[in-house]
Image (cartoon, rainbow, N blue to C red; front, side, top):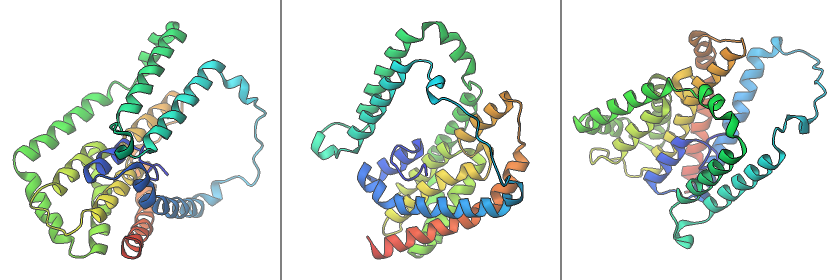
Length: 279
């Protein structure tokens, strides 16, 4: 469901901002594709793993309040998050404030609050940061910029235009290609690469809305094909490893490629239906 909201994924912001989609417009287009993707994925996961799911599950008795280390901090953070989402949902044309200002303001506010409240935990927090991801991403961003400066992005844009002969082929082609590309090079640099291609004069498809929405979906699906498809997959794998439970890249991808092609297809059909009858 990360692709249902503008703030659900950083790649959503990159693609939506390039096309000029507002918070409300983004939700309008991506809500139903997100629902169809979630339902189809849930059904397929149940079919694949139904024999491993226990018939009965005894939930442990846990008091939610006991998990709160700082009640006041939790309340402060919840209010800050709610305010961020609310102000981001307001049209920029009315507020006159760029959409990035509010998240930055509340992020600084939360940072200052945490400095005051958690002084003794700074070293522990820094030790848990996934620092190894930084050079991985920086290297891929450099590659993307090198491709753009070398003219490869224009060539890529012309090839995208050729496979985008109609609205359905543009949506299906972009969504599948972006999903698989994200699975190889991570969804952040992939999204920047595709956005640069869409902005190139060599990309001649009449409307960029369909390919942009397909790119948004693909940037969210890439993490379900391979672990390196998104930062979330890499951090999730690290958390599992720290907890003594690990999953190999090959095992993750085996189930990803088994389930996701149908999920992507259902999502693309929903997008095409929206664009044909709702646009």
